[in-house]
Image (cartoon, rainbow, N blue to C red; front, side):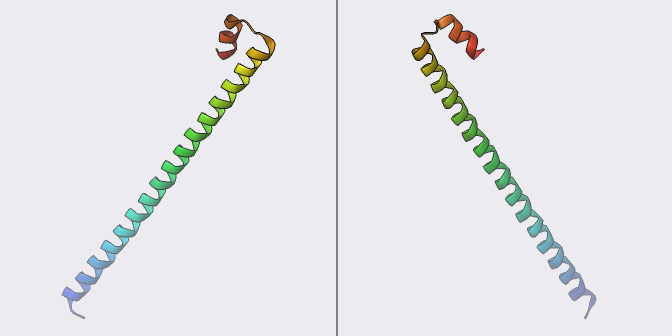
Length: 73
């Protein structure tokens, strides 16, 4: 094997390693984005549930609006 061939092989190996690293980084970024989306969806669900609970509580117990605003804060 000549020096040129050895150098080409090393370059190819380095390129492959770089590509693999980039792919791994993209996968990790995708996972982070998915987790963030799931967290946002969960927060939305909690907010809706809390709103429904408080609304039903007001209607069921005739809580004055001032007390309702205190519950939210």
